[in-house]
Length: 181
Image 1 (cartoon, helix red, strand yellow):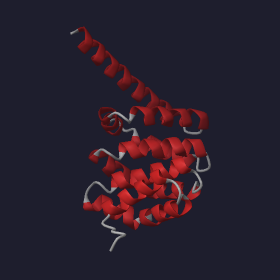
Image 2 (tube, helix red, strand yellow; image 1 turned 90 degrees about the vertical axis):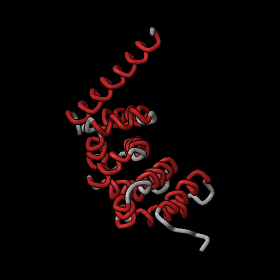
Image 3 (cartoon, one colour; image 1 turned 180 degrees about the horizontal axis):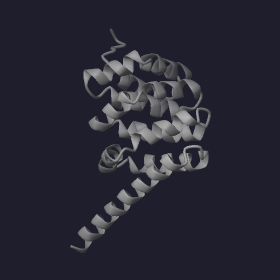
Image 4 (tube, helix red, strand yellow; image 1 turned 45 degrees about the vertical axis):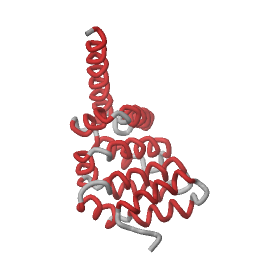
């Protein structure tokens, strides 16, 4: 059971780190460097399903959205934030928090602001696809808040990038759009 206690210890450490990161983000919203690094850390943590669930449950989504809103021209911050949102949107509970917090508008605005940035377009399309994986209400929020147009712009701007094209296609399919018909 030595391995089990190490695993529990690692999970406890990640949980403490996650809460410390979110606390720091709330305390110092105007510190672009801290927000950028914190968003990167949350993105990395959110790759694990349990962590993505925990980030949402401990209130980690509003600070992500707040950081992005507070620093609309900080490209790396937005790249990290939208990457974290793409992972967090894979959890149903988080989809509701993101859509209820006007996160779809923020994702769409970020995609529009940084149209030439491949990583933002890819993460944005993936986030919209993951949000469209949920309820009819989630799909409606994506469609009503400009998600379809944002994906079409991403496709138009990144025609040669197969990863962006696949992510946009996947999201559009989840929304019921069938380009073949």
